[in-house]
Length: 441
View 1 (cartoon, rainbow, N blue to C red):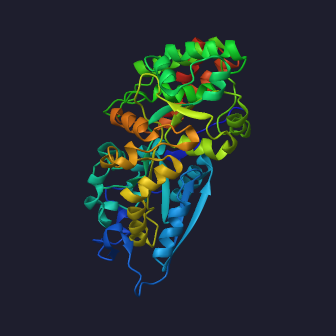
View 2 (view 1 turned 60 degrees about the vertical axis):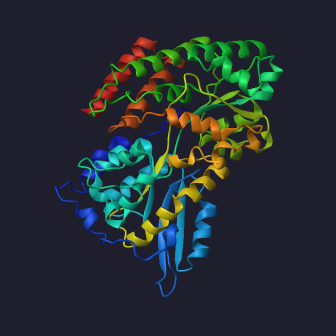
């Protein structure tokens, strides 16, 4: 079964349209203006003292890795209870969109990058974090991550950045060695870093030598290539360019070359079979934005030391990264803001990277010893700190635009039809363009 990764954005306009879109930001007005004078020191945690007990509901998707930090915050702030709901990526965003459309929602919600533009265009259903003191901390973060979460008029900020998804390639160095291929990290990077053509040639040789599939599925290969340019589905003015973008056409051609080479495992991403494949060698490489490291570790604990990290072909690119926002319906906006400001400060972002691989959205951390000297023992002691830091320095923010995920899904589904022999590449391209135009109206 081919998984639909991004179903929620298709209904976004209809769902959030019910919330109204007047000229004033009624949602922001629902949260009191404050200068966060109740914050406890630099970490933003509310001082206990005589503070009234408060329970914060927090909705996140699996793999964000906040569990330990949530527990510590509650220990240090005994008046705060945080009830964290963790669900699968699509389920989380579906539930969040439906709750917002009904005028509700949790106190804190995670918004993945593919949804942030749609949400920012409906800023009235979110608390304006500028009213809670975010102007004092926004310079802490990458400019482009803050810009993603600003309303169209620039007057509201709907979320603080959690992480970014700088890219690399995770690979099974033990399988490469068994196949007689280069397997040392520097050798592997050198073999394919110059071009995706070299990457596919390496994969063809690996498959010929081993009889095994090289990569997992066409969807993740598509994401790796298409996300290496800011100009994919929209230009910097918000105009759709998906049918004429050079990067989109290039990514389409690369994936079709891979399909022709017959070196893929055809295992749907996020499926149980895909998770198991990380352990049993069904594929030897994975597109690995920083956050993918934690996912691999969770699903293949028995392969510690066999997975490694190499550079991504043609360098740069960003896939993923999220924000935490406060829906306008929250009655605990000040406490919620104090928590997310603490959770997303330098100390906690470094911890999230060390423990889960979530790469910081705070650029002053990139050159620190904590990043530059960090190696991950699971990934054969790969120097993942400098690898992802170097990639992060090359990232140019994508022009996400509304329906970004829906557009990508249509291209992924079209590539699936090519892989399944249902359509030729030209037929699939044309049908994808038709479907996208229908979505955009």
